[in-house]
Image 1: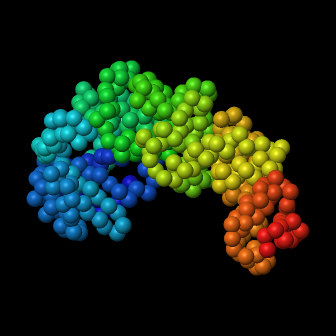
Image 2: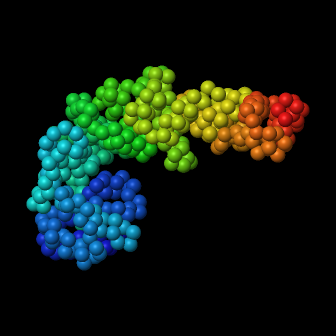
Length: 406
């Protein structure tokens, strides 16, 4: 890490008797070599109070106390964002993901504070300014051994951590420890809001390098009972999701979201619309995912008519081809569809009607009930391949439709 500003702040904290640790997954990602050009840092500060920390940070910019109850202080400098917080204790006081009494305590040790974290791989920190790894619960070894293990019995106080485990397993290709699986099986997710569930599903499917690892943990923890609409019969869902995750990099963010949720819901036993309405009621997904799934039977390389109808349903052949390739584990399906779809001009878009209302007006037709009938008739002929371009469509209309509709 090359961040002279943060190093200077940490030196000022240390000079007053305090200690500062980079947390929030920084240590984990550093060990995995995936930090990249980080521009957001979470720093936990020990052994000094809030007033002293505010005084120190004021020397380096304009700190903003954004979470007074949790003692979170935000500082931005040159496009880099820092969140400073204090170690805290949490006590469960009711039901729900947010039902905790939170108290900051700058006198806690790092080990005591880390005990409240979810998994050992997230309970590490790097002490500033020298970036010394602090690892009280052997998270580094679990990371090396590809093990997902909860830190302590406090894990059970927050049921969201079960779904967090699903996305961490998928992102880092981890296998859950037996004791962690057994603990998760005892927890109910019924207290979680739909929004938090949606967020974890997105991370699992969109950030997961190997979503199948998340699926394994998902099933081991018994989550099929709660999310039964996904359907788990009739195919190897893990392999399908891994295929799509590997090939989705060339898609834009919306396409990637559509393809991954369609993959999750592609097995014959799934109920896609029921799942989306209940858990992920996002308009674009409610519209596009079922349409994509319904287009698959029409992805017939030997019929251009079918291909046009497939592209019409799915907004092009690209996503149906990718999904069908994943389901059948055959990349040639994608290659062939791309070649033919590109030649037909429907690889990334729906077929556009040769005849529009404006064209009919220009031809001298008067607006009326038959207007739409002509457009629909000719477009159907276009899909069948009976008219191949606008000129042929206009010729057909002049020959067959002029007298009845003029």
